[in-house]
Amino acid sequence: MSAVAQVFGGGRARRGGRLATVLPALVLALLAVAALFPRLLVSQGPDDTEVLAALRPPSAEHPLGTDELGRDVLARLVHGARLSLTIGLGATLLAAVAGIVVGLLAATGPRWADQVLMRALDVLLAFPELLLALLVVAVVGSGTANVLVAIAVAAVPTYARLVRGQALLAVRSGYAEAAAVLGVPRPLIVLRHVLPNVLGPLLVLASIGTGTAVISGSALSFLGLGAPPPAAEWGAMLADGREFLATAWWTATFPGLAIALVVLSVTVLGHRLRDRPAPANEDGPRTGAGTTERIEEVRP
Image 1: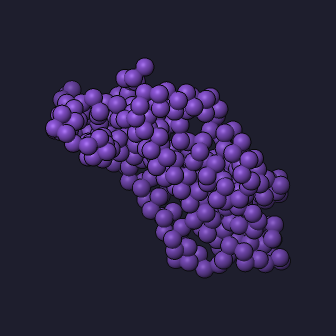
Image 2: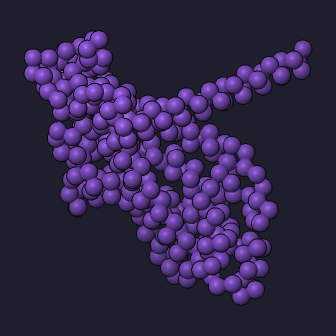
């Protein structure tokens, strides 16, 4: 009986694992369609107003209701996916690229450069990411582009420390040392042997960090620092809808659910990617995307 229970229990676990991967992937695929081709999902524009239909509850004509100006909430959510996802993905990509540059410079450069960069990153890590993004916005000003840059700057220390740790492991591996002995230039060693071992763990961190970036972007827009009105951005829609929670709950509830759904889907997929068993790398250390081992600092 125990063997049978193990077989059926393992089957249920595998089905549950596949479901936990397929559902978030479908959600993100739908969001990608909404961001790229919103007219395939809705016929109305995000700014089409109908004053006589203001604050109508969900119905057949308006599945998610209308806001205070008579704009269709579903249409604004679909069209707003492009702006919200652009901020999240753009900030993550920018932070990852900057983290690669800083982390590789710290790991492969002179020791003094490593010390200076790491102490600077320690100072930045002392601040919560959202607070640091607020400080950057206070300096550079509000707006979609500035919010994207602010979120990226706040996330760079996390990516840079991960890259540095992985790069130090690769630099001190046998194949990298052998390449150095053979006279291969250091930049070529970094590109051929160090960078590939950094990208796997970085991809996992970026997939999880995208959800954090979406939340930060929505939070800054909620505070009025993001895209200016009447842009259909989920955080701004949530801020507008809070004034009508008592009489028109749908104006704030559905934008909040959209943010939560995106963050949950991205985070689940990131954790699934992180927990996936990684094949051993014949040329170097086991640093695939699925490793969950904590990276210890090698250099003091």
